[in-house]
Amino acid sequence: KAGVTQTPRYLIKTRGQQVTLSCSPISGHRSVSWYQQTPGQGLQFLFEYFSETQRNKGNFPGRFSGRQFSNSRSEMNVSTLELGDSALYLCASSTETGFNGYTFGSGTRLTVV
Amino acid sequence: AQRVTQPEKLLSVFKGAPVELKCNYSYSGSPELFWYVQYSRQRLQLLLRHISRESIKGFTADLNKGETSFHLKKPFAQEEDSAMYYCALSASGGSYIPTFGRGTSLIVHP
Image 1 (tube, rainbow over the protein chains, first blue to last red):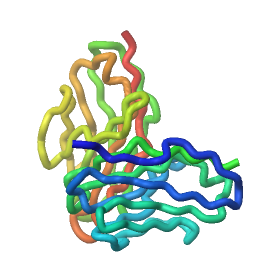
Image 2: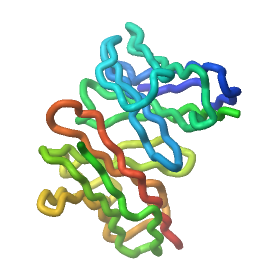
Image 3: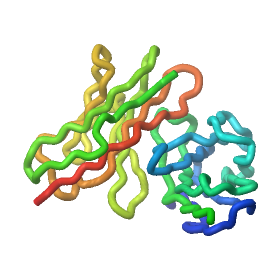
């Protein structure tokens, strides 16, 4: 079956702009989590959606938001981009909880200039 | 609060040598522990879970609650084991969202 699909793979944006990233989970997975990965901070949890509801949230400013659709696809949005938002954004899906482990997407590489 | 520490950023060994990637955790409850691996130009993928007590690609990991460790071991390293390895902890109660370590880069020389 198809894996976790993230689009786009690469993005270059200017400071102050906003960006929307998309994630399609594995069929049947209803939980979608988002992580920010940087060399300095490693993998940091952004938020988790389950059945169209945000179930968990990490310590990121309100500029970072997300949503989940009825087909479990998820989007995350970053408004008023800052240079420090440059990172690899990873989406991970799982069946019900993270106890079975995540299946990760390839990520979206965001560069803010 | 839960924390995962991988003390080595880089581990360099020769093919055929034993490998041990260290992972220490801090959590007051009963943890669920994982190892993830990321090969060059590939996505992050689950390698093994402690609860499964499995051996994947020759790797094993034992949970030592006394030492709060979950080290990943392989008796004979192969060049194809070269990758980035991440240890992760999920809390058994409350939020299960995993906390990841910073990762250890394993390089296996021929």
